[in-house]
Image 1 (cartoon, one colour):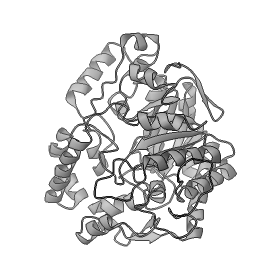
Image 2 (cartoon, helix red, strand yellow):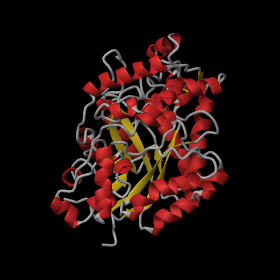
Image 3 (cartoon, one colour):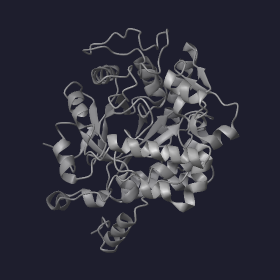
Image 4 (cartoon, helix red, strand yellow):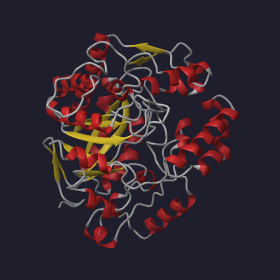
Length: 449
């Protein structure tokens, strides 16, 4: 069976090993200094030997679409061209980098972020169809403001074309592949999901898709087909990755959600369409702790320097406390769990020829090796790179395998909540920060040794 250190090829792209840095919020923005920030965030992983880096969700449009503050926009060809400084630095270390393209749709920050709504009171967000009753109820209570603009059929094709145009510019800038943010309640998931997609055109959930896959293939998959075709038109045969959601973590009050069987059928269909790599993930219909399962981020919520920021984000201190309380309740349902996507990945890998990527709660080198060859072809970690930017130096190599290497990340989520205010992703847990410092002084992140 393969190990984490073994090379692998994905869509013709040769990777030196099977460890990848999963997509994260780099919070680099798009203004002056954004490229330098991305270099600071991503190059340490390449220096440490990580084979593949996924630059986190980057927005393909000039406005809207950002699920959190300071996300990077890649609609401007001039800005994307300057990203060759980043890709050159990654390649200099022998690593490869793919750009994850995204649009938040009804997850965008103008929907939920009080400050963003005040700055853009007339905003609209593209939607697959009218928001479900759950979001309409929150809208009536003044908690969110969806203000949807349901896309016409030709507008769906236009948006897919924009994904393709950005992909072409990215390849010109040296990116080795394109990764689509197909889950985490983004617009692509909204097209796939029966909760969000009530369309009556060819992109509707209920429409029929001709496929060799067993089981029903929701019609929203045609949006991914259209993006695939646009990427091929503008970027040629560049390796194309996507996440595929199974909405198995949906709350009980959500009766219409994407089943595991439908998710597997979507993966089979995308494999036949020509996607080169698939990352199956089990998520909710909403943007919640199903994405970052783990501990309740008590330190982050009680941080004195963030209280005013939380109040601005959520529309007042009492609303911020309510969100924190809901966060605590969710932690009971989505506690720490190792490799929570592995069972779904294993099922998908038995049915597709495309490479399967597994991420979500993976922390130990031994777990990585156990997953490879059975559940997946590559193993990814996300939050652990906030705690240890040069984590690859400790996880790769025969000594890491023999010594039982393990990431320091405790899945406490103190890194995630502050990002709602625009804070960069970094570990905020003192015990972990101290241990990383001790390991740095011992030279454990020095790949030259």
